[in-house]
Amino acid sequence: MGFKTIDDVALAGKVVLTRVDINVPMEGGVVTDTTRIDKIVPTVEDIIARGGKVVLLAHLGRPKGKVVPEMSLKLVQPALEAALKRKVVFLERPSRAEIDALPQDSVVLVENTRFTPMEEANDPQMAQFLASLGDVFCNDAFSAAHRAHASTEGVARLLPSFAGRLMEEELRALDAALGNPARPLVAVVGGAKVSTKLDLLGNLIARVDHLVIGGGMANTFLAAQGIEVGKSLAERDMAETARTILTRARTAGCKIHLPIDVVVAREFKAHAPNETVPVGACPADAMILDAGPATVAELERIFAMCKTLIWNGPLGAFELEPFDAATVAAARSVAELTRAGKLVSVAGGGDTVAALNQAGVASSFTFISTAGGAFLEWMEGKELPGVAALQV
Ligand code: ADP
Ligand code: MG
Image (cartoon, rainbow, N blue to C red; front, top):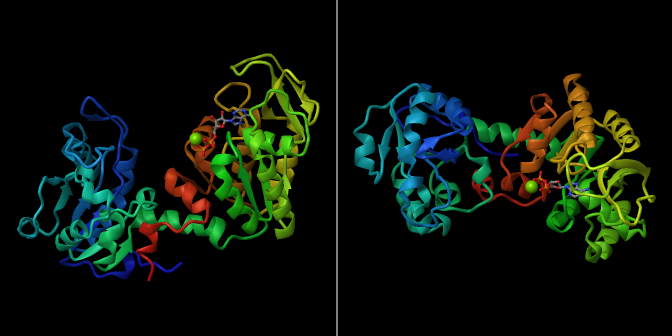
């Protein structure tokens, strides 16, 4: 994995354009969760400590190329100043002269990059303009790296570029999980549908030793093999695809694990009366909402055998108690093995992160990616333009 970091570039006296993800939730013009702002503090401080002048580039919301006052980064300035414990200069229309006139330890925040359609179009003129504002480019926004935009990809092609601390941490964790993992490597994939995760499954069977399939998508695989899944969420039209995946996995030496027992109910709601049955014994009028305890025990046995684990997608309808049981139990087992130093564990995905937080184990995983779309595209084996532009 060849990319430069803050450690590889001389920053003294330089203007460091720094792409960050401070796309924070807002209510009534006030930031309601500062997590993303707090996370960029080490990168900003590090650049200042090395004598660089920080010019922050970021987007907020989806203004679709227009100026939307409620999505002005000016609204984020107070929260940013609080997190950095220093003044931040906001520039609606930045110019190099204005930036040069500021003291060297300044932090500048430039207006929402998405206020012009040129950003998402990766317009060369916009990339040129941004590049003219700085001497070097630091990308610390992994979560925006799956999009080739002017402030993520275009500008990186025009200036000496390197990864910020957050980007560096994410890339190292992801490389340890799927790039150059300690083996055996197990992937856990769950969630609702096979159709949304085809590329992901295709990439994983070529790379992992064990693939655990859970959640609604397991039902599709079961049904494709002629196993009764009653009224479960299952994509019947994906049967052929599912069978192809099973065959290809066998050829690739990837062992697939499907549930061996399941929790079934007649209603899709919390606390619906339910029972645990062996797989294949789902009544015709019931639906599978979770994996059963025998499956969890089997997963614990697999996890204990492996050195690396990567996880996307809950094993059941985790939003509805008690159908979060398998996801929570499996997550706790991963957390325990990780704490004991026996397993490197990486997880990501919107619902997955929510489920791990619900299980109270997120902090025990080696790395939790909050990058959403960028994480999934990386798991699909796709090249992320914002990362590719940093490659040396
Ligand atoms: P992520 O956001 O982490 O990528 P997904 O969006 O793919 O995860 O999947 C999460 C959704 O899958 C949840 O809403 C969950 O309720 C649903 N799900 C998991 N198992 C089942 C099941 N057996 N039946 C119906 N829905 C399920
Ligand atoms: Mg989701």
